[in-house]
Length: 401
Image 1 (cartoon, rainbow, N blue to C red):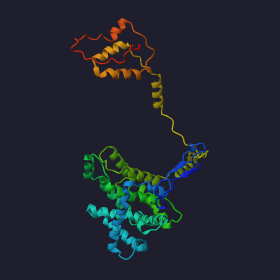
Image 2 (cartoon, one colour):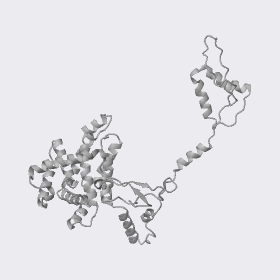
Image 3 (tube, rainbow, N blue to C red):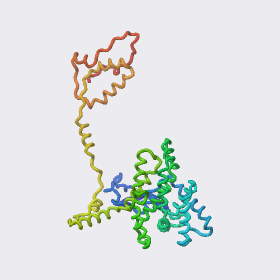
Image 4 (cartoon, one colour):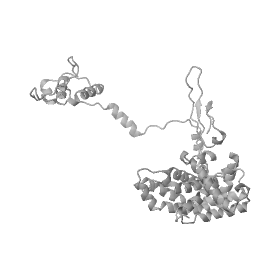
């Protein structure tokens, strides 16, 4: 995020610096109080930095699952490789184990399939248990994700995601539950986490990317936007998940992860602001139109942050409230007291309501006797034994309202 003004930052530990957003407080002024920042701290762009976008994927409740993913990977990895770590293997051994994990996704048992998916998620997260720094985790993360993409992991995950979407038993069970928990969306969350990491990492270009990685990026973008998944693009499948969730048929869908993945899928296939501006310039040149006088995106980036204007409906409603004056019949106070005698439970409420409505009513005077009888008929007389005695309010004669 761009810095605006002098700020006093709240520090965090080195391990938490990448995962937590940067918080800041305004510096105190000499005369007391705090000085307000002249502008908001934000950057008008398609996305934030790579590390910040990855941290947006996880919630605080998913913290214990990181260790569970590591445990699932290490238990399976030690069966095949006993004396080495993942970071000590060569590319051929990495590819062999990745293919072995991919085969584990085809088992019918849900628990075994979920454990394999968690192991793949740990690989996509950079095998952080074997790294000593954040930069090392990011480097291994990019390497592992391109390795998973090379062996065809993304296509297998799309098939599993489609199977979970069509799981009518899970949908009906979630509909009957009064409250949805994390356990109801475990399979979906693991699959969406892996797919989000793949899409976001492949989409981001880095200086140290190999030539084969650049070629894989172009192929992946073409496949992601092509109707290869059930004769429709992958983004259409995600839009279907949003529709199913909004209709109430699948309340257990982790919608935040779905929307994040949909957002990055659209950026990967269609491009962002820069691609849009270049396409506009190319089309204008082909059609013989003059070039654009300015870049609208750059203009918006340099504009000062401001609240959006109120809608027309809000303005009309405010004007109506301002111009509306309620005209009520004028009632003398002694008639109100007589009315309260018949209903002892409203003796105090009516007096409080009159005090609150003083500002809304216009100037009032005493009504004529004929008008007073039409507004409020005289109270019926009851025998002294049947009457309920209640205080009429103030001990002195009330004023005319």
